[in-house]
Image (cartoon, rainbow, N blue to C red):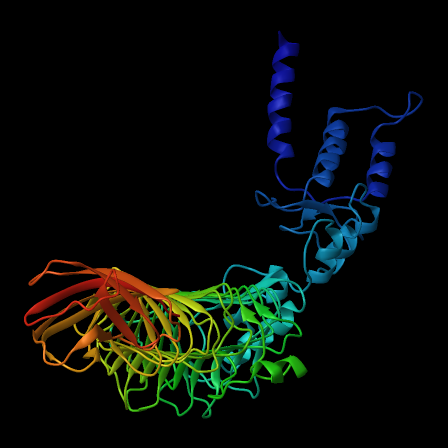
Length: 613
C-alpha cells in the first residue's frame, strides 16, 4: 500500500518537474551525465534523483527550446544539434539537397532548384508551343501557341491592318484563321502595298464595326476567304451595320482583289468604297497561270463604288478572240469561270454618272457561272457584259435609282458571242431594260419584267419565254423567238432583225398582173418560224377597173426564196376556191385553172406559207 502510494506521488512529481523548460544539453553532455548518474554494479547507487535528472535532461534536449507553432517544422540546429522552431520552411543550411531526392521526373529537380518557364516546359512531354507560362489575369498570349488560329488584336501593333499582316506572317504557309475583332485600333490602317492573305487563310471578322482600309486585300491562289458577321443596312448607304471595311486609300483601286485565285469565299461583309473615284469593291481577274475559278461571293453589300464588281479586265474595251489566241495570258483573256455571286446589294456612287454595278470583261470569263439574286441602285448600268464565254446566267437582278445617260439594267457588248441567259430580272427605272449587241450565239430570256424597252440589235439567237415587255425592238440580224410573252407595245423592227413565233400585222400593197383596180380593206397577218413564215390576207376589189390576169399582194418582207404556196376563196361574187403562190416579193392569187377571178366587190381571203430565214 505504501509502495503504490509512493509510486503515484513520484509520477505526479515527475510530471510537474518535466514540463518546465530546462536548458538543453548536447549529446556529449548527456553521455557524461548518464555515465555519472547510472554507474555499473560495482560502484555508486542509482537514486530516484539521479533518474529524474537524466530523464529530464534527455526529454528537454530532444524537444525544441521553445514551443513550435502549429503547422511549422521542428528542425535540428546545424551547430548545436538541438531542436528548434524552424517556421514554415527549412532555414538555409538545414534543407535536404534536391539532388538526393529520389523518384523525380527528368528535369524536375532542375526546375525546383531554379524555377523558370523554360525549365518547366522541359519537364513536360506533351506540351505544345514555346514561351513563358501564362496566368489568368493580365497575361499576353503569344498567338503562336494557338496552332492554326491567330487573334489579330493580340499582336498589339498600331492598328488592325498591321496586326493582320503580322498574323498572316505568323501562320506562314499552313492553313489557318485570322480572327479580327474590334479590340484594337480599327479607325486606321497602316503599312503600304497589298495585304497578301495567302493560301488557305481565312480572315474572320467576329465583331461589328467600321474598319478603315487603305490597302487592297489580295487573296491567295486557293482557299482564301473573308467572312464577317453581316455587313449592310438593307437600305441607303453608307453601310453602318455588321462588319464593314471602308476605303480610305487611293483612286482607281480595288478593295478586295482575286488574281489567279480559286476556291475563294466572301460572305457577310460590307464594303464601302467611300465614293472614291474609280474604286472597285471586288475585282476578280487572272492571267491563266493559274486560272481563276470556283469562287463564291454571297450575302454582302457594296456601296459608293465606281464599279461594284469587276470580273476580268477593268478596261471598257474587249480583247478579240484572235488576240487572245496569240497571247492567252494577256489582260482580258483570263478564264474567270464557275463562279457564283448571289444574295447581295450594290449601291453605286450616286454622284458618279458612269457608275456600274457589275462589269464582265474577259473572253474566257463567266462560263458555267451565275450572278443573282441582287439589288442594284445608283448605277448607270446594272450589269455591263463587255466580253465573256458562254453558259452564264443572270437571275433575279433588279435595277432602280438609276443615274447618268440612258441608264440600263443589262448591257451586252458587241464583242460577246453567246450572251448571258437572263432569268427573272426586273428593271424598275431607267431608259432601257436590256440593250443586246451580242455578235452571235444563243441565249434565253425567261420570266423577266422589263418595265423599260428592250433592244436586241446584234446577231444572236434569242429565245424569249413568258416575259413582260414594255416594248421590244428587234434589230441587227437578231433571230428572236417569242413564246408566251406579253407586250405593252410593239415589237418594232430595225435592220434585218427577226422575231419568231409572234404574230405580226402588215398592210399589203395590192396590184393586178395587168391593169389596175380599186382596193379597200386590205389587212395581213403573219408569224415567222425558223425556216418559214405563215400568213393570211383579206382584201376587197371594190372596183374592177382594168385589173386582169391575177390579183397580187406584197409580202410582209423580202424572202429571197420563190417557192411559197397557199390556198384561198373568193367569198362575195362567185365563192370559188383560189390557188395561191408566192415569189420573193409578192403573193399571186387566181383560179385553180389559172384563169382570173375578179369583179366589182370581190372579196379575197387567202393564206399560205413561204420559206424564210
